Image 1 (spheres, helix red, strand yellow):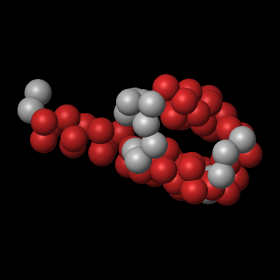
Image 2 (cartoon, rainbow, N blue to C red):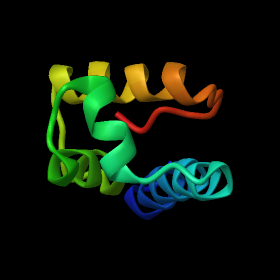
Image 3 (tube, one colour):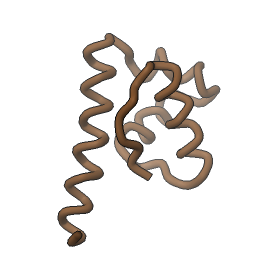
Image 4 (cartoon, one colour):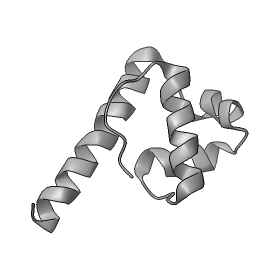
Length: 74
């Protein structure tokens, strides 16, 4: 897989989760208390700007909370 293909796959995974949240009417300010972090941090998670083991765990927690079963992008 090329770098461009990998970037596309990651972008699609982020988009699918954001679309899922939009369909469910869940916004970052609603999700922040679930992981005990700020709304800004949730936005960073959703955009892929946050990284590392803690970000991965927070994202998994959001997946569980929202019932999402898609690809994780870390």
